[in-house]
Length: 229
Image (cartoon, rainbow, N blue to C red; front, side, top):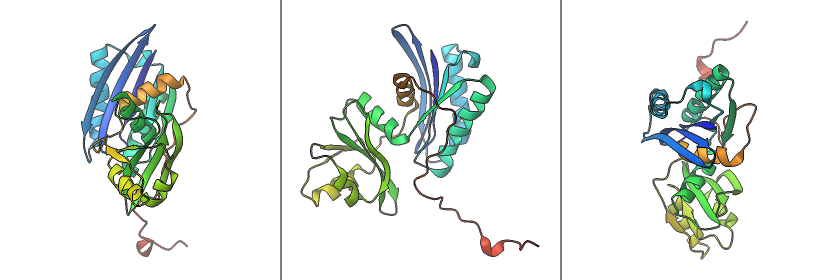
């Protein structure tokens, strides 16, 4: 089985090909931290890993993409690429949220214990928040929530939070006399972790849809609109 995974949802761009043959597996991956430029970087990464692995697009069995939350534009890049490739290859699709992908990455790194939280700074005093067990299975979320509200949702046994919003969550927990250790502040979603989730799931979806937990910052300039007749 060959799984192509794509992520452009947050502050990194990544692509991975996971090849499963019997009990063996091989991973070919590229990842680069970037604030912008995901659209230009993604397909060259895909080309590199397909060439390196010697895999033809016709040999793909599944194409996966993170669905958000994250950057409004970034989320759409990986989804659009996955949709386009699936249309050409007639390959099945898989998608999951970016916080679950981060949870899987943290689990692979061995940086967490059950249960733990993923917290991403969503700005404007809010967090993207999810709660997971030791196997990175979702217990709650993803939510767009204030740090104090997120702290109220933490399980009594939760002691670890990961992501660039983990420190904010830890501060909110401290105000409730709870101790949360903030880890992996540079953690980003990764296509390699997404591929592993897709393989573990054994599922597919009919269509990939962006997961936006807040409306886009951009607004139509209604004052400049031309009146219709």
